[in-house]
Length: 89
Image (cartoon, rainbow, N blue to C red; front, side):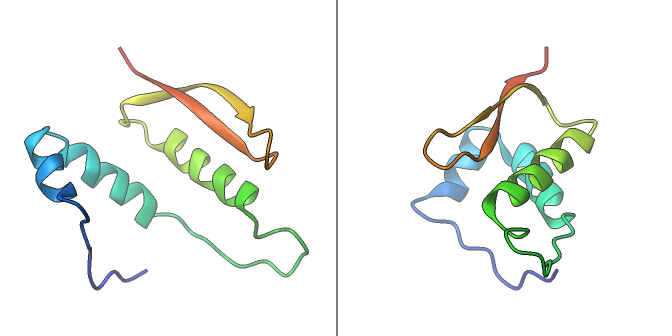
């Protein structure tokens, strides 16, 4: 994947720097850039549910990521799983 431009909205870049979150932002960016997303031919194989599972798996693989998954629940409206996370001690 090639990113040609990053846009920060509503002063997000300044807020990230001011709050000392630059390293965390870069780590999250690296995780997303390392995702291998392929379009599948099967029906319903490319939906939000599958993408969230792929993203959650990638975050779990990141050993130095400062959050740990504590529960996986389903959104009642969409029946899409999402992970509740807690900062590692």
